[in-house]
Image (cartoon, rainbow, N blue to C red; front, side, top):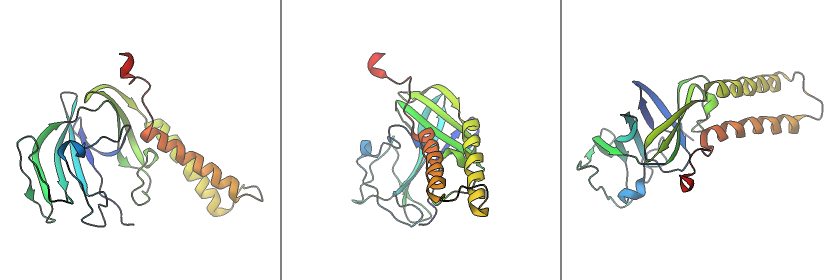
Length: 201
């Protein structure tokens, strides 16, 4: 599979890649009635979104999307125009994303990505933005945890490659540990928020 285009988030003047959100709500395509379809091998999900944090709140600022039914409603009063790839683009929008949950973002790629499997351990700077109705409640820096995972994953891969220090029936033990580490990285990416129990607020 071709490397997939990333959604991006501008935060405090720096551009991050969007790694995941805990509720799977971005960019809230159902709100607009979209049914995205692939237009290129580099974007199987059918859309590319850009976001920005203004005044501590999350906004959708750009959306490139191919709709199955050629349904392109106005977003915030703005109609799409055909972009350079021949796909409709919404530019100059500022649409609030009132999600409650968390958004995990990363920048400064520190480890090679495997196709589109972007995970926290692939980045030097990783932040979890905890939100309520699209407003940031708190920011948790996951960079150290991500670096520790990356270090152990790379060490394990190196040992496996060189066949060093591995017990003899091994491959299964090696594979299980490797998968455990990847699972921990995915938990950082999609982990539920302990402070977001809105039913008790």
